[in-house]
Length: 536
Image (tube, rainbow, N blue to C red):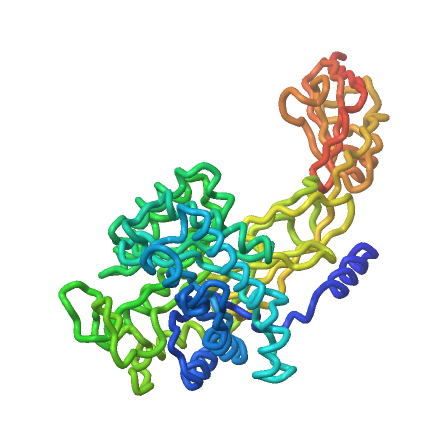
């Protein structure tokens, strides 16, 4: 083994974390439900669900101005967190003491807007990172060893393209104002919090993509949120795909294509099939769940889907408001699992790790003159995400292709691993390579064999060049015009020489250029003249 190989091998061993497959915490698959008892929550945990979304009504926690009732919210958030499930609240609904109906957004006047800011600030101060609930109430309820799961993502309002949730009528401009004041209130308490736009059904009183297009027309609005949300309910897979693509097109046209998309509600009912394609029967519900999840995972990267929430966990005893709400659960009301439950769990709780592979970039043990090389990689599981690092840096989320930071002229190692949607991690794969941006010295032609002049049409051109380089011979000034007339290694150039061809009775000025393993080319050498004399 060469010294360089020993050095690289040691570098890899020192940087490679244990490469056996593991499972990371994944919050990609979620459930939408508020009324959950202990059995429901434990069942969700057993299905490896790690996040739960529900509509948190302002009036529940602040029934009167200046007075908060934290008890029910503490219990809901705490029970879920104690079983490893983080809450994503959709904040909605005016309390009675704020002007307007529950669906009226608190904008248009300083009193309502300030009350909303105060409410958001109180929520983040209690349930965000370092929140008071996690410091006192939570350990008192679940023990000092219980792991806090602070809320990191806040969804602003619910379905604002429906009149019943946004009174008096859906307005992209008014919703933009609500997002703007919410952003400041939340970020002032937790600068790293994610602001998620309200989820919208594709076909509401305003189509989701029409509403979003109007929303993007508000100046600088892209600076006030971190994710877009959609509720792509549809009668067929083609309709679901169209809704997602339409929203994605609006985001791209709004120069916001890099922003993630959350699917914060999504389902089919298990009631007997109807004429609208929303209720599919027990078997049909499972089939639609399987097909839609597969479709979304296969397009996860292109659509940049960050979260997927199924609506909902268990059928309610009584339901109203939509044609499928009573049967959209994965379990019947009596907790007997439907076929859709096993299908759902097949996605969320599978434990087979993906396999990552590097498909392009500097080769293993190779050289590159690019100080910011680009690597491409893939996973055998659709919907996988990736984390990358170079040398001893920390793993960070990345996507294929990934371009490294500026690297020095030295040996380096690029690492990548894949993480599938339920959180299984692949083994780490890696490539060691050397960055070399320094061009070799210009070669020097010192002789020909036979010596010039000579009656020989194929002389050996000899000289010295940097070891390990490839030497090309030219008959043109500057070694630029035309192709090389002969090629050989630096060792061959030294002895016995590189064979070149010349016509009878000509004088040829040879020049040489050396190229190293990284592709760096030297300056052109000085000319060396060879005279071919075939005349007796």
